[in-house]
Image (cartoon, rainbow, N blue to C red; front, side, top):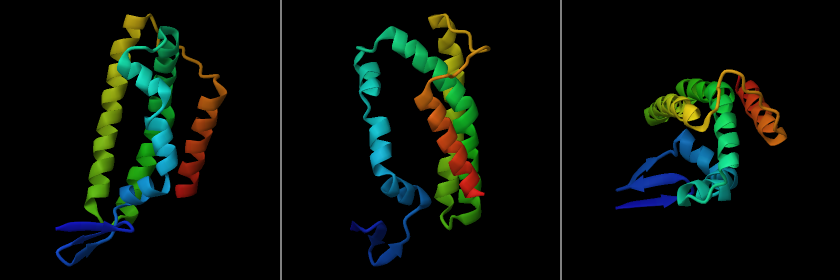
Length: 143
């Protein structure tokens, strides 16, 4: 029988510390929920997305994943490798890097279908630029 209490897992009297990922999700629950339960995400799922918005997202997502998110994920992987006592943290991050590669491949495949050139994209949307800066700050703070 397994019970959870305050981020510690109890399994037949065996206590396990929470993983870095569990700590992160607990610490950033509101931001994670806001990002994953966003109306835009739901509109993609149910097919009601505005196509011009989707095209803009696809452009921004490509630049974001290839630049800011890949660098951030690499920094988190390094941090997990240095600091985590649980090998699953590193394994999850390695899998995440694979998913980023898959997403970049998917975006490259989708772009021509939407008549988008990925070679000359400029991201000038303030919220996206602010998020880029935020991830850069997190990378710097982790060093």
